[in-house]
Length: 289
Image 1 (cartoon, rainbow, N blue to C red):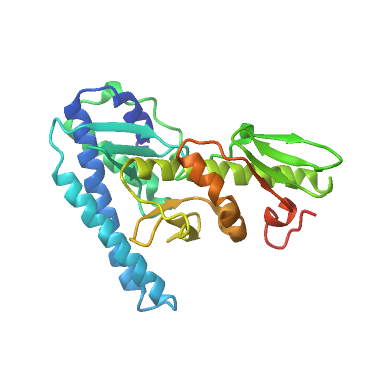
Image 2: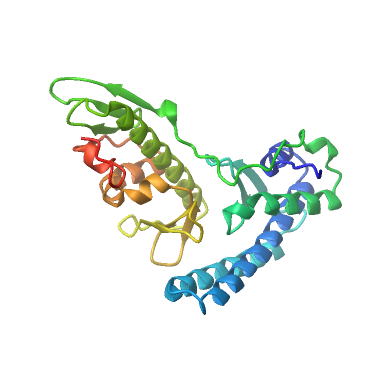
């Protein structure tokens, strides 16, 4: 059986390595992303002929082609001394900052992420000796996404005036009306807070790279795959692909927490109390109150 290595482990071991090695990794990763995104655009345009959602597939293909072109142009600028920084995101994914520009190293299809990462590792190890950079091979393919639920980022308090409250240390509080369904309420609050933290970290990385966020236009929609969502950052075509199923199911919540999210991205604390949290955090068809 071919050993399966983790790309984020290779990258972490390489983080303080020589600049030419970092440049090789960034160039290989970007070239593999160009290939993957070009294939995704071709697939989407082909599927337009057979599916009802032709408009969505056309927009997706256009956006993916633009990303592929951007990644190809960026790859061509990389020289042995180009500044490259390595970061592992809250989703366990690899992020590269190439001369100040952040890039999430990912396949457009989450189910193909493991094979995509193995191609990057194989090509990099053909260019550079990497035996000392690879950890023990994984027993199986790494998951395409590891959810960051933030289980230890919420705390609970109870009072006759406010009722049960699920809060965070950075100012966000969800107030429930009663003690009923407390277990599902805990689960829902933990999941939503975890996804908000993941979203904030991903947006902050984009902002650091010069992307403008229009907070009034911020929206979460469906992605190309069921396991992912598309986060619209502005009206200029900038977006993220993240696994945010809980937030995607709770459309009204994003508008309410937007000021808190904007403050968190900028490193500030913003106290926000969300009333009637049982209604806002309830999964569709599963009332909490």
